[in-house]
Image (cartoon, rainbow, N blue to C red; front, side, top):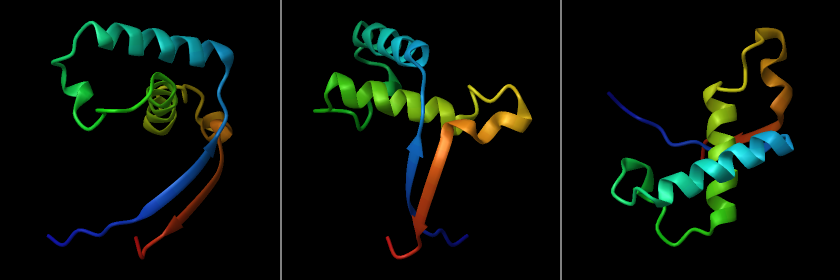
Length: 83
């Protein structure tokens, strides 16, 4: 199977509640340094980790419990195939 690489940039929105939830999640993960969560995250700031967690949850559909509003958090997406 041939794979392709695509670079994509998202512009997302999030609430203060979502931010605080992600912040608490990152603090909890710090108490578990051997979890798979940390693979590839060495050297990132807490703020980067929080924003990544929010983006992950938005793009994975965790905040999309209403299918008609599923895209409300993603404002813009740009992709390029020559990554």
